[in-house]
Length: 156
Image (cartoon, rainbow, N blue to C red):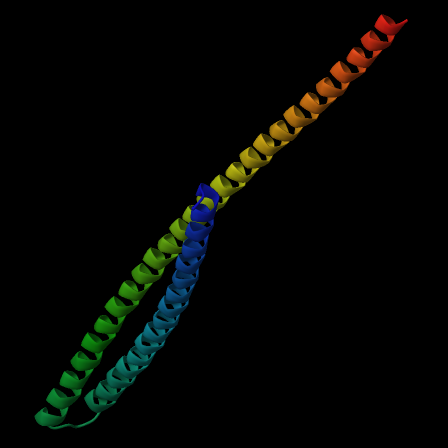
């Protein structure tokens, strides 16, 4: 197997790796979007819990009602904090996947450039061989012509 064929196989492999990286980035972005939506829902629930607790605080209430409303608000705050961490994790995952995609692009491009260089070198070698063959043919014709001319002079 020639070096060029090996490189072409590597190019195919790198293209597949690039496609995989694109799919991973798409999935990471979808996860990031989902996490942001979940965080927004948690923020809205937290605001509703705070408003409900405030409403209860403004009226006459039982201690159990206050405790329940307070616990619910704390629960919503904790959920919002968890969702915030999930968004941060999703953001980091997107960034890491994006870096992987860039690395895959660079790897593919480097192999493509090497393949192009090897192709140019192979063409140059073929052109030199062709030129050498043409030169040998031309030299042979020149020698044959000189030999005929010398033969005619010798006959005269």
